Length: 295
Image (cartoon, rainbow, N blue to C red; front, side, top):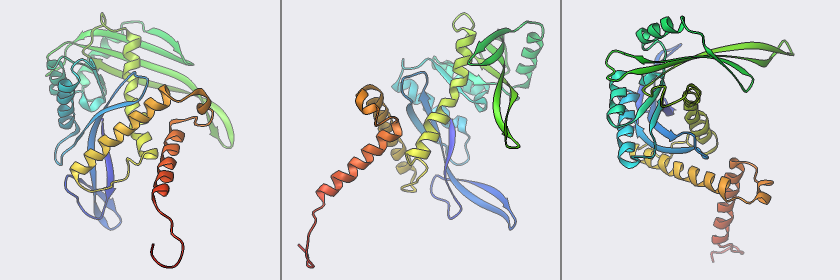
């Protein structure tokens, strides 16, 4: 997944991209840094694996290909499937992953209208499976054997319509309203290898990187602060932050004693304790002198 960081209007730093904003005074340039990141899904901890800069003038997919190639070299058997957003629904990227022995699950939107049209036609002639999960009614259509332009392998398409009731405040009162969401996914995994329910779960798990990695690290771990405007420094800081975040999660979930969990009841609370501890140790190492003159 690609994200934008460190927006500024002051100057364009090396490796930063540029975009234009319309203001009352005309167009105004904003400069920002872009990175693609990946994390391992369905683990006990949120595990970010790698990042790759998105260079000026290139798109997110080009950066993602470099990550996939590096992951396949470094973690050959660590993962089997790449779950990605609709931006990656293109033949070259799918073929790239399949050529390295990895399947893909990709959000399907209007980026492949012919594939959606074929799926709609077939799904209209079939009754959906109906699930009831966590207060939601989910209608699911699932077929494989689709073909798509520029994609070298058959594709499977899963369509889910999810309906649930949520409570919202309206005119000072809490009212209930019905919400319906429609989801489409395309995958290279045939039905014989993965159930529809597991495919549905994996498709939704893509949001973990945005919610559990980027949002958490930006709000609580200073990922949104640029300590040095240098491309190599930004990458190194982010990778070090990933290591610290992973170690803190491992300690919190696997080593923190039950008695301490009553006091330190979240990962953020643990991070605050560690930070406070660094301040105490720093104060111990700083000598305190009395009197007007130097020691």
